[in-house]
Image (cartoon, rainbow, N blue to C red; front, top):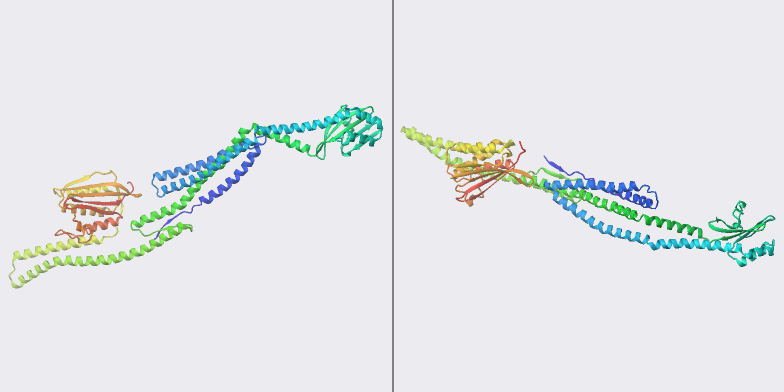
Length: 580
């Protein structure tokens, strides 16, 4: 049955891109609002914008801090891929920071220089001078009208020409070409000369203040200055047009001057607002870079972690794992290639195992036939001797006794041989459960101590709790075989010790059995676990083969270190169980 390792689809990157787009839109909108509110005395939305400018980066900071703390916790816990994740996140964030920092500094310098040039004192002086120049121009034009109106020339011109409007207009135009209209109002009628658009239509404004200037009027965007003088029963109004763009230019100069003064008073607020805007733009960029690097690292690391997990299972001999990925990029191509490789390895392994099984059983059959033939020969000879004596009638009680004892001894040897062979062939799958190793060790060692041998059995107390995944009966069989081998090796002292260890990310219990016996010759070190490999007279050579098979069935590992005449150390690693 195939077991699948699914890599979940990571949609964080898409979400972050959408969020970043929203941020950019909000930044542009708030920036325009911010700059708009600065030009008015009313702060308007300024408090709201400032709150959002602080709140939004703060929210991203909290989110980034939470994710960073999670990565640190994973790194300290040794979670696979956490080290690579930290490197990817650090590199990505550093690149963005290095790119944003010079841009931010240059932008700040540019804005600072622009503000200083814009609000330089010389600009205010120039605006004041422009406004004063406009006022002087206005005053000079009005002064010229006053001079003409109060002059004797005007009164004499009116007396000399009496009612001749043409002569009066020509006389005024020759002396004062800046006068654009002359209006004479009297009891006998009005005389209007020059530009008719400048004539005063509202008689309520006449004579309201005696001799002097009349209120400035604007017609078709142009300013009109007028001065009136009473001459007897007549009132003379002199009117003059200012330059065509005077009104617009004066308004622009006044507005620019007012804005400059307002900006000068708010220069601190303006710089602070631009700084907040820069932070609002740069801060989220860095935080977004961190979050995007988190999403990208997940996309890279999760397939690698899944491949690592599957590789670990394969190294333990489990070829049933497959890795499923949701995308179609290079990493997915890698996982597909990995899955194909596992399938091919599984097929090859099955073929190799089958071939090895056939070859192994052929060897075992040959060795078993040889081992069976050895005791059968003395049994046959003893039986034939008894048969011959019985036929001859010369049956000797002592001879029969010796022959029967020989037959029984060889039969016992055959029975032991078949029992060891049955254990080697296996009695089914082990019934693995979590059990404590210390009680099993104490019980087994006490059994050997009770035999009464001269061997010093030393059980070193390890950790109090040593939960291990094992079959209780088969684990005892392993211990008995190894301790029996140590005893038969002529050991004077046997040391047993167990400790909890870590192999990669998985916990194991390591069992050590050390003896000071004769040791294993180097020429036998490569075949020590092979069946029927024994140097003892009555040994079957299946004990260590049985031990190795049991350990492999428990997904464990067994190996040894030995030196001739110095002793042997056997090591066994078994998967640790959960705490009972």
